[in-house]
Length: 218
Image (tube, rainbow, N blue to C red; front, side, top):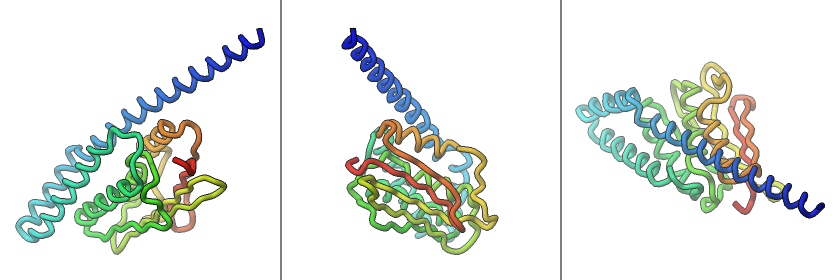
């Protein structure tokens, strides 16, 4: 009787774990589609095409670089959108291509530095990219150079990523609750690592800091 009870309990746990993973897969897929749609929504395309039309006449070299950057970002997004994990090196490349596009569009100098990041480590796609997008959207940067920082270290046998973005001129990240971006990140982490991860996002001085902790062997 005891063995039957233990077996039944184990079956329930396996079923619950499978159900949670399937829900995470569906959620991350849905949010992934939302994020991809965000890149091709009408006002994004309209603003980008308007800027391109001006550059083609006044600064054709800038227009050519912009077209190349847009093509590269969409190409990388298409490659990774249906994959569970990608190289961190590919994730960083996607972020930097996006920052090139936004630098041209906003007339600012966006850049991202990294420290101790293992480029071969595996990560869910577009996680850091989403943090970069959130920072640009919510902080309303207006001038100068804007530097984002990503660092990685090992703590107690776990991989810890810390992403920092400077606060905008209002001194606030501008968040009210958890938006599509963070929901997408949580769903991707749940899909890839089950419950074996943590995410914390908060203000630290003059920066907004997001910390993601993952299994070291991932």
